[in-house]
Length: 141
Image 1 (cartoon, helix red, strand yellow):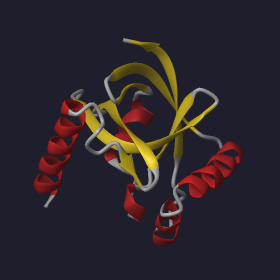
Image 2 (cartoon, one colour):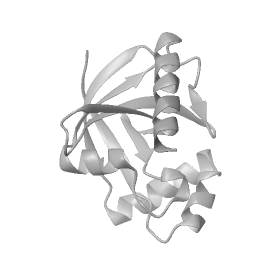
Image 3 (cartoon, helix red, strand yellow):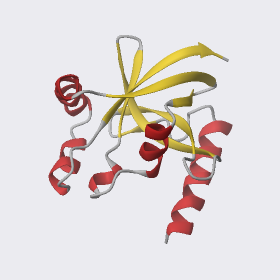
């Protein structure tokens, strides 16, 4: 099952890139970016499509993992190495990821739910607090 999911994910990323975000550019009311992290064990690059919204010139993403009780692998990777790349349509952006502090998370979570109410169901499915991550752009490539 894991192999099938990875295969589908690769196809999704390929189609997003080929169409410059026209395919797969939206999820649950949010625009989609491609997040590339460096594997904490392998050092390999991994790309994941994620919904995002903007906050003060930064990109906000969520490690919802569809409400599962474990954080997604990409979250562990960026916790080990906060230097990431994001792709939005045809732009590549070098960035630093910051896991939000509790007070900021509350405000951003409220904003996320107002933009994409479907994410609220993920919080009820899991016993973990779903992290929100702010992506700070460093420069456009």
